[in-house]
Each structure stands twice: as C-alpha cells, then as structure tokens.
Length: 405
Image (cartoon, rainbow, N blue to C red; front, top):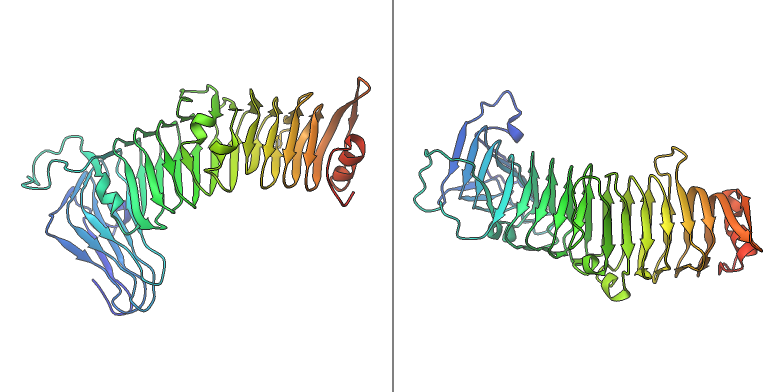
C-alpha cells in the first residue's frame, strides 16, 4: 500500500474503531511476528492509514510502517485495537524525515502496560480463547517512532516504566474511568496529556522534558504522590508531588467537588517546571502552610481562591480567576500579613476580592471585582472598573511596582 506521492490504506479487520458500515468487521484479528504492513510515501507526501481492528480481540506482534516521504511529508496514522481485548507487542514506524511524525492509536476496553518478555509472541495459538487480554508491551511503546495515544473505555494502568525514545513524540492517555500510574512515564521532550473521566492516581515521576504536561480529571480526583484519595475529597499539592514532575509547562485540572490545596512548594521543586503551572478546579483552590514558589502561576476556580500563606512567582505573571463558571459565587482572598509577590504582572478577577495582605508586583496589578480592604481597622468596599484597577491598587496600598502609575 506504499506509493511514490503518498501512502495508501490498509484496513485489516475493519476501519477506524470499526465504525465503517461499508467494511465488514472481523471478530478476532491476529498479526504474526513475521508480518509487515507497509503504507509508506516513498518520495513525497504523507504516510498512509493502517487499521488493525477486531470487534472482540486483536493480537498484534508484527510491524507497521507508514513513513512520510523522503522529500517531504508527515508520518501516517495507525490504529491497532480490539474493541474488547488487545495484545500489542509489535512495532510501528510512523516517522518523517522532514515533516511531523504520525500517530499510533491503541484503544481497547481496558489497557494494562506491562513489562517486556510477555508470553505469547512465540508459538501463539491464534484461535485459542483469549480470556481478558488487554496488555501492551512497554518496550513497544518506548521504541515506537510515533506519537502514542492510548484510549480506554474503562481504565488505563501502567505497571512498567514508559520511556519514549523518539524525539518530540507525544504520549496521550484518555480513559473514561481511571488512570493509574504505578511506574514512571518519560518522553524525549514530547508533550504528555493524561486525561481521566474519573480518578487520576500516580505515585511515580512524570517527565516531559521541555514540553508541556497536562493532567486532568473530568469528574473524579487527581492524586500525586501521597495526595491520593477517592470521590469528592480534597487534594494537596506539595513539594513531594511537584518534584516528581518535569515539564516546560504543567497544567493540572480537577473537576471534582473537592478542593485543591497547595502547601510549601519550594523554588527547587518548581525548577523542574520552567514555564507556567496551571491549576484548574470546579471548587476551591487554597494556598496554605508555608510559602510556595512558582515560575509563572495561573489559577482558575469555579468557586473561591484563598491565599492563606505567601506566594511568589519568580519569573513571570500571577493570574487568578475565581467564579470561572460565572454564577456570581467566586471570591479571591489574600489573608492579613501574607504577601503575593510576582516578578511579572498580577491579574485577579473575581466577584469579590478581599485584600487584607499585600501585593508586590514588578509589573502591573489589575483587580477586577468588588474590592474589600481595611483602613485603620475599618473594612472598605470598592468596585474598581478594570481600567482603573492597577492605579487603584497602587494608590490605596502603595505596593504595586507599576511605573505607569
């Protein structure tokens, strides 16, 4: 299925996710270790499309090549899956000399990433009852010349270290239920996206090098290191957790009803994240305990953001948005005696801003919302419009280092 100006299509057992009614789906599909499927672009153009599908079980031990053209073009797209069960121990080359590498999609019901040397490659009885096979060999992921995407209708569990060796190759996990990392995952400067509809739990390192790491839970709990819990409980992010994550930017989003707490995040721990740390929550975000440091920090909460201890951004901006769902129930609070320090700009947007501590910004300070402060022991309220916010802060508090004011 290779071609001079682009790869073709190889559909084995069905089309993408078995959804093409024009293609009859196989119940079980077996690809032997000596089999090779080619959909390369020989000279120019993109690599082709390769689908290995089964409505029940796929066993894949062979090799897929869908390489971009030698003179230009991107790598192709490959899906290998059984709707219920998958045993993936093969190899894939979706590389490109001059373009973007392609994507390898593995999307059975459940996924378990296991160690090398799994039984079954040699002397496999392809017609035997498969049982509950849903294993992916970690080494095949590590050596894949492709962006790797793993989707599961239920759970994704990693029981063996993942270390993608292809430069810039991304790793994406999407689970309709839980993602559990019992071993570390690393890319060679490729982005990592870990998205679970329910719980995300990890006790191991996550390293995307100079790329971005995104961790999200749509309706459950995020647990990093010691901060593991179920249901709608709270989560605490501390030095222990962030020191295990290396990335250019880090985005953590938790849509559960619990709160995100941040405590004692030191400069040495956040030095692993050279760019922006983003925390997003449908409930509250609270900074308490000892002072925390970040390079650049962005906070988004549907409810309240509370600064109960001092916080500092050492390189860039501090940005906070409470009441992100616009239901008029979001408040930003900076406690008495605490300092919000930023090497860049400070931008705060909330229904009500209670400023009893101090703000020290090298750049501008912009406050949008009803402002509550104290003056000689008396509480005062004022709602500055956005254009006046930086000037108002500077005049009232004398702490925003804004040369323009």
